[in-house]
Amino acid sequence: MKKEEFIERIQEIIEDEEIEFNEEVNIVNLETFDSLAILSLITLIDECFGIVLTSDQLGKISTIKSIMEFIGYEKFK
Image 1 (cartoon, rainbow, N blue to C red):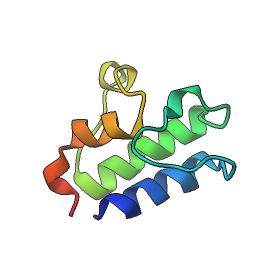
Image 2: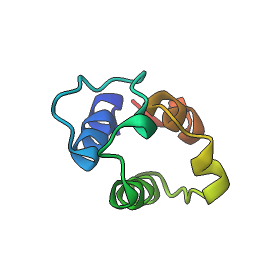
Image 3: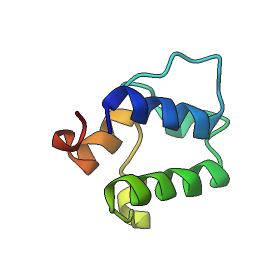
Image 4: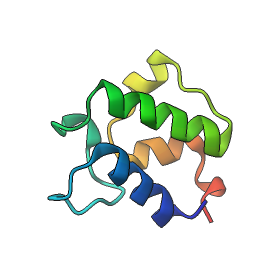
């Protein structure tokens, strides 16, 4: 998956069209980052990369960049 596509998918999950999404966006602080968005993000990462986030790992994620670092930049083309 390309980096841009991943960021677009996160934007679709979070449903906030007022923000310009990029790697530096702190998704945790967004009002629309709710429990449904969290579940959708976990599902996206599992389906696309075969990685299951634990609650501890999820607690360490704040920005899109931190998600990509967790997954591994080499998986983004």
